Amino acid sequence: MNGRRLVWRIARLVEIRDETPSARTLVLQIPGWPGHLAGQHVDVRLTAEDGYSTQRSYSIAAPADGERVELTVQRVPDGEVSPYLTEELTVGDEVEIRGPVGGWFVWRPNGTAPVLLVAGGSGIVPLMAMIRARRQAGSRTPFRLIYSLREPGERYYAEELRLPHPGLDVTYLYTRAVPDGWARPVGRLTIADMNTGGWPADFGPECYICGPTGFVETASDILLAMGHDARAIKTERFGPTGG
Amino acid sequence: MGFVSRGFRGRPRDEGVKLPPGQYLVHDFPVLSAGPTPRVPLDRWEFAIDTEDGQTHRWSWQELMALPAETPTVDLHCVTKWSKLGTDWKGVSLDTLFADVESSAEYALVYSYGGYTTNLPVEDLLDGKAWIAYQFDGEELAAAHGGPARLLVPHLYLWKSAKWVQGIRLMNEDWPGFWETAGYHNYGDPWREQRYQGD
Image (cartoon, rainbow over all chains, first blue to last red; front, side):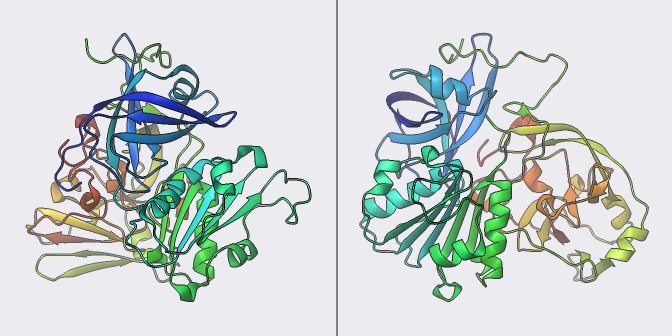
């Protein structure tokens, strides 16, 4: 994105996929879209009839596919933008978008180091873009995903992640309720989870952590304690604020 | 009339609050950083100003605490769109730290424990516009928010207020920092909505 100006573009909603009762994927068609890297985000701007406008950032959920851009939006209770995007917006409607934004929290398919993805709740979105980019590129880079959620019903991309992906291991952690017969008791991410579901530090993995602040702090502290190089740990955080 | 989002009304307008364009008001204090939170023990903490002539001025934690402190109340504007108004800080003005620094450099590169960098003109650090802050809301500054001490330059987007600040290098040439080389604006004035390169 060096030197290129980020302009506002009109994006048209062409498809909706419900991920959970409170989260949906919006597939947008954006004429002139310059492409993006897995892990980047966009700014969305909404404008009311009286000229009032407001912006929010959303992670892109899938790798570049021409002019199609997929966002997954979690409805934030009392939010200003996410209820509109998840409840009002219908196929054929338009929103303004600019991007892609963020050149740090990205995975490039030519990467060869093993990859550890650690997701807390809706923090899965940019990490899913990396998983899909890996598959799209036919990459053999080994990936491991640790996905922490409150309960099974909150899983995004559940069907897609259930399919076998050679070279991708997925570990689910539940903090409030588990499926029947689930061996691990409910609880937050621990060093044991990271030992089992992640990579040893000597493998030199690239680590990407995305989730709420407390989760990201815990996950990155665990990786540092396990001997991972701080420079190989990339984080993206979101607080309870937003919407 | 430009673009209108069908059916979008937005929150009730609060005419009493003026925010920079594209920002919205929050009441909590979100955290954003690119990597793990560094933890710097106070007995090894040091802050430095390095001049363009190779002179270095250093302060230990005790020396920083011994300097006269100010208690600015400022508004914060993050490039990720949130603004937080009327935040209370305690710290040492950069004017105090620069009092004995001889330099004619125009550019500063701020560097942090953990490797973060950000750049800004030296004049944006002076004349009561910037502090090395070590308390927020009457409490020691939490590590996640940049403690033990961070730069506070509230008139620019918050990524310029480097967390875990370690030093300021004064230079005759501008040297883009971490986010400035990753597509974000070189200066970052929220009132002119300078979020990204070219804005």
